[in-house]
Image 1: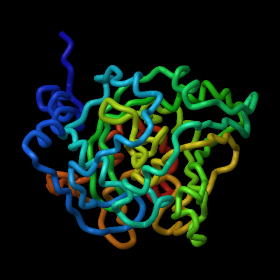
Image 2: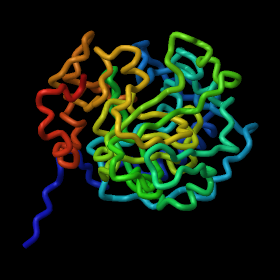
Image 3: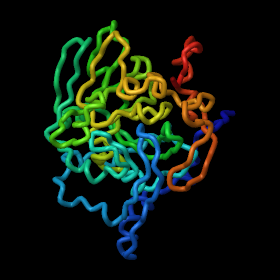
Length: 333
């Protein structure tokens, strides 16, 4: 007799927020004439913070339609379930940080200036053949699916959202790296004409992040191109961003324009700014405190509940083997 033992982070389908609920909530509030006010407190820079935002203010009808809209929603991959309700869409799409558009926690409005077409993605470095591909051609070449992941910020808050996109492993295979490539480096766009934060010279623009090839080809590593059954909003990293749920959120590079394969470990944006606080590995580890606060617990966005943080954000079954032999190097720092 086969007995399925639920993993520690799994959520029975009956407890998940139904799609019809979170997709129809905006229409309900509009009919009632009520706006949802999202309030929060300021914190550190790396992942974002709660911003006051009226539900009815999130009206972006004047923006040109996203050409990829017809691709969504996509089928949910039920292998990836969680132990918490899905975070309200209005909160997840206004509780952002995108330093390219400023240090304010309420950057979702400013981020609407980001043009998402034309958009190209360059695959270069140690690959069989360097090339640049248009975003819509890349989307057509990738197997899209939806995954519900928990997201843990180094600032000690967390959320749970349904990303749409494709496994980073699929993109690695598409790029055809050489066997000598050990890392993949991801770079955000750079255009200070539309991103005023990039005029701040004390930041090491452009935003750069990196993973080992083993991390990048782990089944959890994901390139998000959609959110809540729609194209991913600009403030959340349109048209494509990284989602690695076992790592702190500052690893989730947004609005990617380049994937470079290399044999040298990169120094990422936040690591270059402050290596003693933001290390390369950035794995969620409740036993390793940030130099200025504990990582032992987290505040669940929306509910305000404070819950214990799990090693690797609860995804150790998938990723713990990646770090065997690295016991002498801090998994966080």
